[in-house]
Image (cartoon, rainbow, N blue to C red; front, side, top):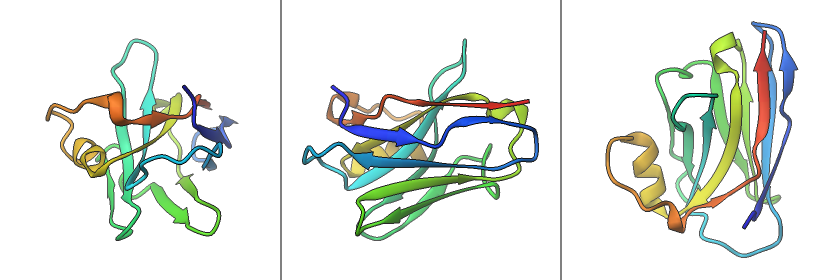
Length: 130
């Protein structure tokens, strides 16, 4: 059941930039943690960035650190992912996720167990870098 709406994906050349946006569709949900995941064909889903919405604390996967920035606009209930210096290996479907604080822990420590039943997802937006 989609409760988040993403936008901003597209096709860019290597070195280019894109900004993804994620906004609620109107349903009240647990958004103590907002995160961006991505999944490329044949690969596992990867958490690339997360923000604790109360403190603003952020975390990035090593693969995107220094290139991607997650931010939030509390007035708009919107979370953004600014992606700079894009590489072909960034090509994937990107998903916005909202959940409890444990979701942030999951992004920070991918190997720990986590029940995604408490997580709300967007429909995904494709990013293609050539």
